Image (cartoon, rainbow, N blue to C red; front, side, top):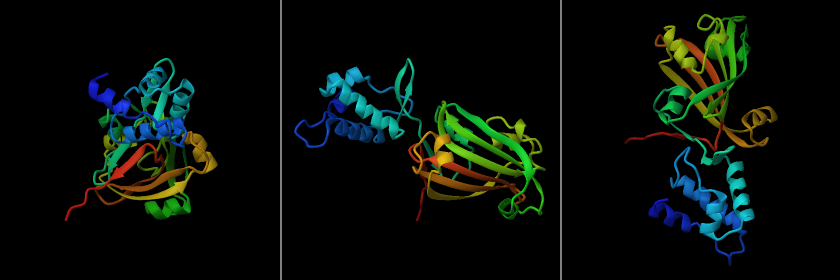
Length: 248
């Protein structure tokens, strides 16, 4: 451990005279240190033994503090390896990229855990949002979007069947499939709002029911202006940040 990192870690030592429990002090200080970039995504945190020695705290205090960080989604535990900073996706709102592209650009491995891939008749909402005729056929894909085996979002996509006749042929990236078949999404409209996780979404995302999430509704368009994709993404807000650059 370099001297700068060691000094920063020593600064996290809790105040024994404070009325705030030691584990809560340590958890809050570690959370702030993670937010300010003391450790980068996927970097290993010091072990509980190291934290105990450097911060002069008990093993129980260290474990309770780490448990809080884990519950907040700030760290992930890898059996036999240690504790690591959880991946976080900072997505610019001014650039249209796929989930897979964003995850790879940050050094993580994107993957999907498929929940369902099927075809059916478009619902009324799908008809309206995708500009379809009544009783049109659509393909639907529901999956968990993951970065290095960490669930980042629960996502459902609907496409007209003329662009995706067989949803089982899509691998990790829907946009890569569309690109390879001459149906690239070149423009998209996104609506982002805060929601509370339903029991189903919470279970899939691995969070408590009612937890605040970001729900993104996206309609993707072809270069011709025709809508090709309707996607609902329920994103864990402990893993997602959206940024927008404003100019005057």
